[in-house]
Every structure is written in C-alpha cells, then in structure tokens.
Image (cartoon, rainbow, N blue to C red; front, side, top):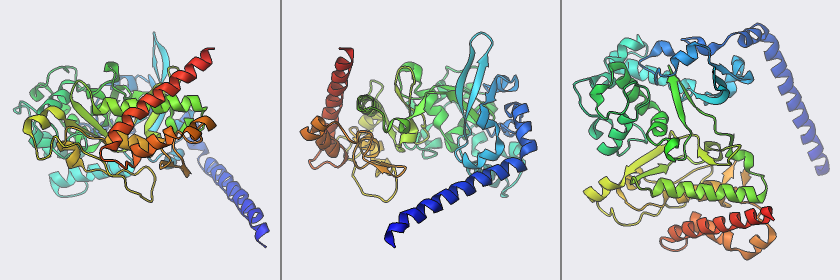
Length: 434
C-alpha cells in the first residue's frame, strides 16, 4: 500500500498544477479587455495610479516629469494589473529612457503593501480628524508632519526618535546628514530644515516615519562606496532605484568559486557597515537572500532592501558614555521556527561602541548551515569541495561566527572567516588564470 503513496502524491501534484493553469487561463479570459488596455496604456503617467494626487502625503516629486513624459514604463508582466495579487511587496521592474542615453532597467517600489499604505492614510486621518477617512491633503497640514514648520531651524532627535529603525536612536549629526542629502528638493545641500518647502518637509517626515529606505539610500549613497542600490527619484508614492541584478538567492546553486566570492563580499559588507571612517554603524535588522542582489557585470553584492537599517552614531556613544558603552556586545544565537530570523536588542545596538550584530546576521541567515530559506538549509556555502570539507576550517569558522562557544569568539571568527574566504577566492582566480 505504501509504495503507491508517491504515485498518488504525484497525481495530486499534477492535478493541482493543472487546476492552477486552468485558473490562470480563466482569469486571462475574464480580463481580456483589461489585458489589451494594459499593454496600450502607460499607467505610470496616471496621477492616481502613482498616488501623486495624495501629495504631500507621499515620498517625493523629483521624478514626476519623467513619469508624466512617459520616460518610465512597466516591463511586460508589470503591465498586467491582475497579477498584482501576487506582488504583495509592490516592487516592479520598469524601463527608463533618456533621449541621448537610451533605455535601462530600473526598480519601482511603493515602499509597502496596499494594506500598509491604506493604514498610513487612516493614521493620518485619525490624527487630524479622529476619523479613518478624510481629505488626506488637508489632514496632512494638521499632523506632526506639518507642525515642524519653517520656523524650526533643525530636525532634532527629540522630535523623530523611534519613528523608524533609521532613527531609533538618532544623533544630530545623523539627522543633519539626512536633511542635507535629501534628494526630493531642488535646494539640497543644506542641513537647515527651514530651507525646505512646507511640502518637502512633510514628504521627508512622512518617508522617515513610514519607510525610511529612500533616506538610507540618499544618506549613504552608492556613489560614495556604500553597498546600497542607487536612489534615482520619486513621484507620488512610487520610488525609483537603480536595478542592481539578480537576487542573491539565484546564486544558491552557483559554482563553488562564485559562492565563495559572494560570501567574501557579504562579510566585507558586514565589516564596512560596522566599522567605517564616518563612525556610523549601520545594523541590518532584516537579512535574507531576497534583500541582496548581484551585479551582472562586476558581480558586486549590493543591499537592495534597506527599510530595516538601524544607524547608531559611535561618536555620540563615546561622548555620552552610557552604561557599559565600552563593553563588547555579543549577539545571542537563538533557534527559531521561521526563516531568516534574528535575535537583537535595539537599545544595546544604540548604546555600545563595539557590536557583532552584522557578522552574526550574515553568518546565521546567509552563510552557515543554520541558514534556512525557501525550504532549503545549509546556507550559501553548502556542499563545499571534498578537500575543504575534510579540512574542517570553514565549517568551524562559520559555526563560531553563528553560534560562538568562546566569549567574544564571533569577532575573531568573523575576522578569520573574511581572511579565509579571501584566500579561497584568490586561489580560485589563480587556478582560472592558468
């Protein structure tokens, strides 16, 4: 009886697959008119579709001329609105064209699900009128986003602390950097809040509270060597960023030499975001294979989802000297029953100078045997060549980086792991060159 079980399961799988195909076909038939209309119309020129009509309760307007001129258009599948039900994160691929430069691929983001965007509208209305529905534009002028008006010289920590991960523990130095580099104004370059228009101030504060990813990309730009996607602009509630490449997950079964190089880069990112000349520590609170991408030409690894990045100012910590500020902080490994989970204390990240969180996050969720994603285990460095597996050094370093046995063991393991991966990558390059 048991030997027939796989056969029955196989038939069941084929039946479900057939039902799915039939279901999609029926949806296509029901949406035939909309299907043709979707291919004929560029919805990115529609003010209501991109929620430009909701400004200043939006993310910016710097790219609106490009949107309205039809320079930005969805790629094939992005044009089909009935597929939006599968696109929970509201992330789209599009083509952006310039007369002299030709077209290139960009990524468009609404920075939240439809439900999350609806909830922010309700919150704005409730704060302004006490009701969940209202005239959103008028309501914005009655919220805390508008109370910080032109009479306020600086954006200060006491006003925005805790609004999002970016400003969980903001310093004045960080906020000055955010305002000075704000890209949704023509007069960027000044850290004085009063130099922004009323609408620009509200858009900045709305972004800071709802999803600060654009502000992370602007404040720590790729042009200066930070490992983030390049911010391009916004129109309404759609933000455009540079297309980096395929997500890291696509390289899960890549050749060993490629995976070693990617792992080395990931550890370099952990180091750069933790220790840099600017003395800003950027801690990645959401680390998964979907949040990184790899450039098709240079093979460079880039962070493509920067919503959950906590920034701690090490200079301020050294200056204020909170309790145990100079005691090395060790992230604690914890088993969990879901994918890409991390254990951390935001308050500890904000009050210690030396923190191992980024090493822990990269090792546990991406590289080690503890990494789980889409039903797989083993991490990016799974199934190493026999001579490396036999040596045991790689597995030992990954284990100590993820679940250290010694006090402060993760710090040393992370350092040695970076060096070891660099050696492996160099050896692979030498072998290829011969």
